[in-house]
Amino acid sequence: MPPVLDVELRRALAARVRYYNELGIYDFYRRDRAGLESPESAPAVVWTDSSALIPTLPTELREEMPARKPAVVPAVAEENIFEISTPKPEYGVSDPVAALKLIREDLGDCTRCKLHKQGRKQIVFGVGNPRAELMFVGEGPGADEDAQGEPFVGRAGQLLNNMIKAMGLRREDVHIANVVKCRPPGNRTPERDECETCSPFLMRQIAVIKPKVVVALGAVAAKNLLAINAPMSELRGRFYDFLPVGARSSDPSWPGARLAVTYHPAFLLRDPRQKGEAWKDLQMVMKYLGLEPPKKAAE
Ligand code: URA
Image 1 (cartoon, rainbow, N blue to C red):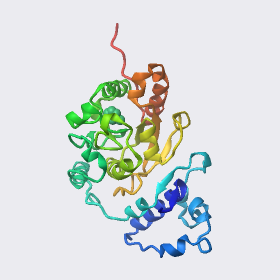
Image 2: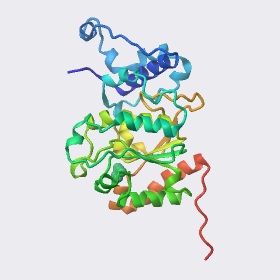
Image 3: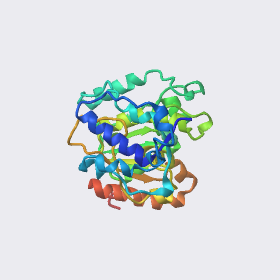
Image 4: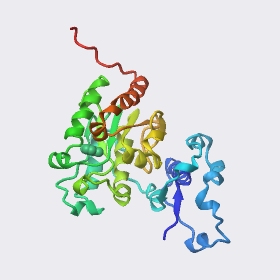
């Protein structure tokens, strides 16, 4: 079994590789795995504790490291960290429309995970303003989205539209995408391998759009964007600093986004009593973006 890295070690390594990428270094060589796996030469701390790595990071990258939360340490496969060193077609393309087109072309008629042979009609890439300040990320397309090729167009989408309107925005002002771009059969939750295969494309989309705020809709989006495995009650109610893992922004003036977590609209359809809580999350985002709810028409 390949070794599994804890989230903070993974983030520390990702930050380190990003730092080298910014210096123009893309090629990395791994030391012999046999040596690393021997208990004598590789103490357990290497795989479970990122603290040993942090002092070697530049100060500005060190500050990206979140406080340790042992209760929410997820397991993340090792391979992704090294994938981030591969230059992507959109690197150096400053026009987000062109860059998103290049990512879509790179995705192609994707067969990278099993969802491609489980009844998807089409890939649902993303929709909206390519320069949006606000981006919503859901879980994966449902039947309506699969049929129309656009995220959030079914019942949950109607509710999301209302949420966007209540924030004083229009659907075309924001950007909307999902963690997986193909419909999971029967609308089941996307599986870990499917998310891990597809989310690098989402990370690249976010790096191109450079939003000020990303709102993760539901636990699947939150877990995949933040690499944190925690219940919604712990994830909501605060901002996280978010830099897309493995993706490179060509804009030094984009330090990353703030990320907020709220309930998935489909959950709110099932339990409308939670709409007030979701509204609190959106108000936090509105305050940060300087948005006012639309004025009600005079009665
Ligand atoms: N649910 C999602 O998570 N995404 C969609 O696009 C539609 C429903």
